[in-house]
Structures are given as C-alpha cells and as structure tokens.
Image (cartoon, rainbow, N blue to C red):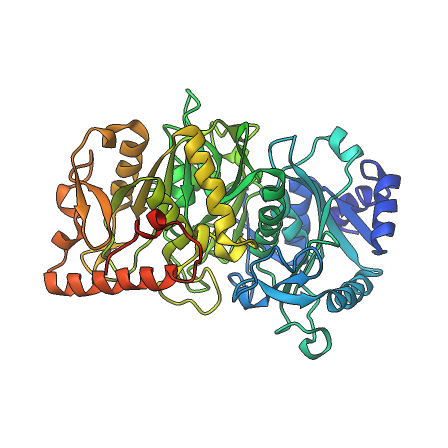
Length: 542
C-alpha cells in the first residue's frame, strides 16, 4: 500500500469526524461506497490526485489537471426539474431547460448504483459566508482533485461545524458516469441536472469542475429571493472604512481581475448575496482565468497560485513551470484557490452596503464608451439587458468573442425572471443611494480583429476614479446613440479614448456599427413586458 493510500485509509468514513453520523447520512442518501474520504486535508487530496495520474505538481505546489474534451461549461446540457415548485417560478427559456422529475429519479438511482463498492471523495461545507443565511452542502466526487477544487471554492467548516453538519443540498458529480440520452432524456452523455424539490444536483460525463460551482450558484439564485436576499453574479471588495463596491459581469469581463486590488480588501470574486445587513460572499475561494496571466499585470492572482491551488487546462513544462500564455488546450484556462491565498482578503467574507456598483461589459464591437454613469432607470435597463461579449473558451464551441445579452449579467445561472432580480436591485439602490457605472473592458478603435482591447491599466484607473469619487467632479457629455452619460475626462485615462468615435479611423464605419448595436439593444429589450416607460426610455436610440 502506497503512502497516499495509507493516509486515505486512516481518514476514510470509519475514521473521520463524526463517522457514525456521516455513515448514517450516506446510507439515508442511498449510496454504499467502498470508502468515503470526507474533508481530507488539501495535502492528502493533492497526493491522491498525483498518485491517480489526474494531476501534475507545479513548481509552486499547485496541482495542474486537464479536463479533456470539456474545457468549459455545457449550457445546453444543463436542466432544471419541472415540478410543482418550479413550474411557475422558473423562467423557462433557451437557458433554463425543463427536465422530467421521473427521469431525474431514474438517473439518480443509476448513479447511486455506479458508486456502489467504489471510492468517493466527500466535501462537506457551506455556501454563504453569512451564518444567518448560509446553506450546508455536500459534494460527492469520484476524483480526488475535484474534491480539492470544492474545498478551494466553497466555505470550509470547522471541526465543530463538521460534527453536526447536515447538508441541505447535495451535489453528486461523477466524471466517470455518462448518460445514455435515449434512456434518460438528456441531450448527450453530459448532464447537469438541478432538482430544487429533492435538493440534489446531478453532474456526469464532464470533468470541467466549473459545473459544480455554477450549479450551486444557480440553486442559491433560486432560493434566496424568497428569503428577501438579492443574489448576484458579481465580485466585491471594500476598504478600511467599509466602502464596499460590486463588480457585475460575465466571465472574462474583469470581475476577478478588477476586484483584486492591492489598495482594497477582497470580499469575493464571483457570487454574492445582498441582504438587509450588507454583502456576503457565497464562496470561500476564487476561480480566476489564467490565460496570459503575468505577475506584473495581476500580482494577487499570480501569487495565489501556490500550495493547494488547482489549475485547469494550463500547460505545464517539464520543470513544473506553468505556461500561462499557452492556450493550446483552451482559452478558458482557470485556477481555483482559497480566499486566504489573497493577502488582506476579508474573513469572514462579508461587507457593508455598497457605495458603488460597476457593470462590466466586454464590447467586441468596439463602440461602447469605456465608462459611463447610469441613473436609476439606466441601471435597471442595462442590468436587465446584460450586454457583453461571450469570450473564447468559457463555453464549448466559442472560439472568438460573441456578442450576447445575458440578463442580470448572469443569465446562465439565473432561474427566475429578470424582472424579479432587477426589482431587488432597484430597491437596494433606492435604500442606499448607490452610484452605478458601466465600464467597457472590451475593444477600442474598431471591433475584435481590428481594434485593440482597452488596456487593463485604463480600466483600473476608471474603477479607481469611480470608487474614489473623482468622477463626481468632472464634466459629462451625452452619447446620443447609446443614451449614456460619459465623462469627458478621467484621471489616468487619455481623454481621446473616452469617446470611442475618436479611436476609429473611419467615423462612418463607427456610426454604422454603433447604430447596429443600438438596434440590437432595442430588439433584445422588446422581449420584456410591463416595464415602466422611464426604464425602457433609458436605452440606446438607434
């Protein structure tokens, strides 16, 4: 028996914290694995991942894994069980696909049979840093590195909390189990199935660990509105005076990068709730993009990739050094690391009511202003629109930026209607006088392939000015096409780029592209019914 195996036997179901209680819970759930390794320390999970051949060790102690065919989410394979709880509350659309409860039950039983007599890895923890509203979770995996991923991303319990832990939601994620579409009703061998009533998520056929994270995010986004808590796809940070800021945006727009600020303290990089007492992180870690990562541009993320971090699909040399510029496997290279890898990160990860909210978009058309100030109606319009560009690799089949409208800057994870979330945001703005800005981190001087992406240093300068109040003191102009209030100057940013028209060589080409995008805004917003005229009128004018 090797060293790793010996360690694992010592910490299996018969030797873990509260073994009898835990074993009874597994039996009640209906699985009987050969061994169940519960909440192993990171070093033991690293050893297990290396011994299994799933991972290699980097020069700084992180593990690097390859997820095979699936290097991003599979949105067409994500389903929500349609039943009495969800039939009138979920916004059934091209994203929220219906799945029969009976088919879910049959697939669940088949997966339980699959793990009989096999080893599984279990992470018991929490979603939600606010102890008053957090949800106890259990994640069952068939690969050690994914259990390590879960322990990086979610909130880890103390020994005392583990003694009494009882999951409210369970994720059964088996990479080695593939569905038969004709038999179970899935679209392919891959499936991500959410059952609100049974309080279970089933994932199979894909090794991409982001599916675990995002499925539980979707669950929280369904449950929290009924508790009066606004769930958000955003990052958050604060300063010594508890001046909190939120950064909304889809993957690749800069949520993680721009919230990782040496002058401020990180609350979280992706998923939060806004309650009557303030902001709280859903997670206990970060899941950052790595493509073209450098120590100079993103020092906090660079230095967080060390012992116990998990790299996905990053090329690693024979010397153990990651090659972050290598996108041969995917542009969607990722790293998962715990919040305590970020110096000064807020622990527990909670903050006060936000002074500033920033909507991030990556406009691949190159026509939106780099920064605009939004009033309440404009904030509602752009929150419900959620315009951005889906960047390469974040989903299967996306090879170059693709313009999309993603409601609430997170439509793939928002089960309810956009108006439900927007009304919660409006209420919070009214209650706390929060200032709203729209920042474009996309292209300038032309569309993707012609122009260049706006420099990160400029985007950081815009954020700094917005948070510091400097943009309250400058002159603004009205962008007549996009109906936006645009500053004529911003500290640290050349005045010329603040008007995208000035950055294009051909002004007529800019005008044509801008009006085409404005028309797309209008066409998209037409799908919403019953929206007050002031919000509808806050959008672009083609």
